Every structure is written in structure tokens, then in C-alpha cells.
Length: 65
Image (cartoon, rainbow, N blue to C red; front, side, top):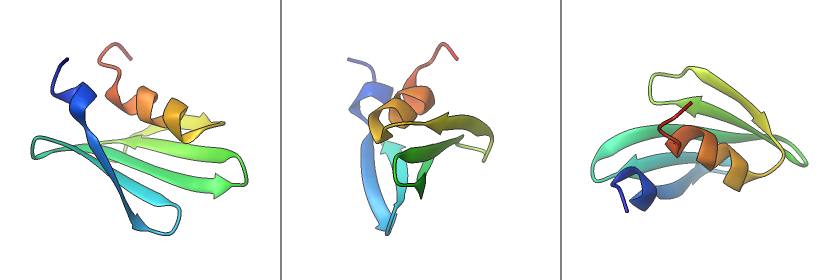
């Protein structure tokens, strides 16, 4: 497993998560609708909207984007 796969996601506000892997900021996920999650990378770049939080996490942590 790589460090990025070991990322920890913390809900810092209702519907808003921040990811961290061994002290490195990964990005954020924001619930924007009932089943819509916006993923942003470590510099705030929009990666897209996804139908699940796990898909949004994968968009952030997948090194081959």
C-alpha cells in the first residue's frame, strides 16, 4: 500500500471532508446534493462531481488522473 492509499478523511464540517496522508494534504470532498460529491485536489483544482464519496476519494487519491 502506498501512503496515499492510507489517507485519512475527516469531516471538518457537515458535508465537508479533508484528506490527509502522513501529514500531506490530499484535497477535499464536499457534498453538494443528496447524492453528489465535489472532489478538489490539494491546490483546490476541481476534479469533478461524483455520485458517491468513495468515488470522489478515488478521484483524489488515484495517482493516474
